Amino acid sequence: MAGGTRSATSEDLATRPGRDTVLSIAVRWTLITISLVFLAALLLAPLATVFTAALEKGFQAYLDSFTDPDTRSAIVLTLKTAAIVVPLNTLFGLTASWCVAKFEFRGKSFLITLIDLPLAVSPVISGLVYVLLFGLQGWFGVWLQDHDISIIFALPGIILATMFVTFPYVARELIPLMQQLGNDEEEAALTLGAGGWITFFRVTLPKVRWGLVYGVILCNARAMGEFGAVSVVSGHVRGLTNTMPLHIEILYQEYSFVGAFAVASLLTLLAVITLIIKTLVERTGYKRR
Amino acid sequence: MKPFRQPSVLPGFGLTFGFTTFFLSAVVLLPLAALVLQTASMDWDHFVRVIFHPRAIGSYRLSFGASALAATINLVFGFIIAWTLVRYEFPGRKIIDALIDMPFALPTAVSGIALTTVFAQNGWIGQYLEAWGIKVAYTWIGVTVALTLIGMPFMVRTVQPALQEVQRELEDAAETLGANKLYVLRRIIFPTVLPAMLTGFTLAFARAVGEYGSVIFIAGNLPMKTEITPLLIVIRLEEFDYKGAAALGFVMLVISFVVLLTINLLQAWGRRRLVASSR
Image (spheres, rainbow over the protein chains, first blue to last red):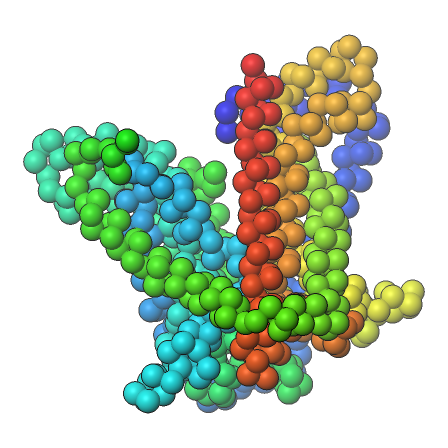
């Protein structure tokens, strides 16, 4: 964000007397109304629907839908997947950002492009590539079958596909942040006799903590909510390989709307919590660039 | 010749570089290579037959047409929303600003079933549109609505910072010199935010082309009519036609690369304009 003067709206009004003509007020409220109507139709109505549809048959029916063993196992599977994927991608994000931000080497921008690649790929393709590798007609399909290992239509496939789609989330928050903060403190720590690990845990990690939180919560939200990629590799075995989003699809297609929207309401709450944490993190001064 | 890396006092290059490239190769590059090689192992006629199959062409038409339309809708409304959030103070502005990111955080399956319910014949909005004879759910209009929701935050979030960069002094100067508001909008504001708007358009378009979860619920999924390309890939996979799925996936991958390249070029252009204008 180079050059240009930033101007806050409220200061503006104070320093700009005589700006509130009838026309400008009319334009302002027209534009605000258009924005609000657009967002209400596209965003707020669907959000409200999730909860009204989930509670359509009363609160008891809503709670009962969580006693269904298939729903429970879908929730457990989603939590399990996120518990494996998020730490791994966080580890990758920390490593990659240290590598990219602390050193100058050839091909660095190419490496960053490759890390961002999964964001440009359709979720369906993210699942497809693993089927092509590990599916029955895939490269390793026959070998895996001979050794009785199942990846596709099983937990490992779900984890891999989720890892692929959420791959860049932590790294792309940390890389620009670490680059911006520079290496002065780390170099000082090393000169004062701290080792590499101590420097990382005592100096770098505290410096980038908000960026890390930001990346991790977005990674987690996507990992728990991923549909397309997981749908391709999961095989939709009820109670076994259905994550929450896939279970929503099955319940919805069976016209079990209360059940579908009850599970959806949990994921919506997750999204709301994610946004709240994100907003709080931004309050600390950590802003998206 | 330049050395591979410049010397640094900081430790850990070997470890982090090794881990990064290994993990990247294992999770992302090797699988993508499998897709490319699967496609390369097809003979040419088969490849052409698959990617120009009438059903495939129908799906491209819907996927790209609806994505372009959705991105265009976002171009207009995204600009208005970004403008409202940057320039005006109104009750609830902060909450609205935070809500813009909702489609990023909300699982696509949830937005899919929720949008379908809202826009179905008996839905909150669908019933009024039905009275006008407009069917949204299970038609291409529904697909466009879902893709508009998915692309909206990309547009708003790229245009917002660009609008904050617009130099208000220039606007004031123009007005003192007798320019009217539309002239200021056309000659000062649009030129500044144009690169951001094009980037936002491309990002929204790219995301929409690949989108699956939120579309399949509202689309109706009739071959040739309301079937998007990602769904056709899934159908091919379910028929165990791996090669056919790989070929279609390859086409989409190539298109994503072209789009990615376009975004990079647009951003470079935007930076050059910014530098030129601040001189």
